[in-house]
Amino acid sequence: MENDKNHKGPGIELTEKEQEILLELARNAIVQKLQPDSAGVTLSEDYPVLKEERGLFVTLHKNSALRGCIGHLKPMAPLLDEVQNLAKLAAFEDPRFPSVSINEVADLHLEITILSPMYRIDDPETVIPGKHGLLISRGYYQGILLPQVASERGWDRETFLEQTCIKAGLRPDDWRKSDTEISVFTAYIFSE
Image (cartoon, rainbow, N blue to C red):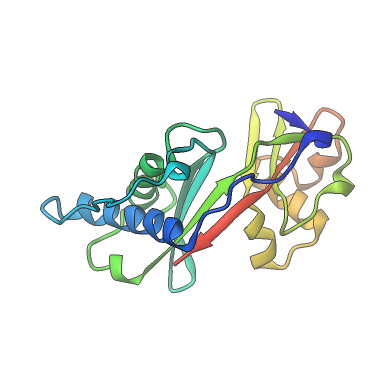
């Protein structure tokens, strides 16, 4: 985990075409799981940036409501592969929701979040809602919220910290305790 002084942001920029490819791969992975005979995505060019390994989340929305979200904080595989894996996990394995049906696919709105390296902070006052994502850990408990969650819900810094604690299974004010670790990251976010 990097420290605050060396943090430079997500460190990745994608062209519109590269974003479209990742979104198409994610959607197609869901369709292929439901209809194995459907056509796959063929890339006609080489896109080196899509072979990079990054922390990544795929989020599904239906009618503006969360329908699934799965990801990894640390790099697991090249973006081209991991976006497909996580799209299927978000659609069929998110324990908060039933599996996506073929009738829902057209109504899904996909969002991809590529993470920067995470770094630990000592001063919670440095958290910037909408810019930073949060990882709060205390003992065996851990919770994460992506940067866009605070923006979408209009949360201030304290509410964002409290809600991340709640997500971790902690009390809302546990972020104030000296044995609680707070880490932040930034993200490159795009959607359909």
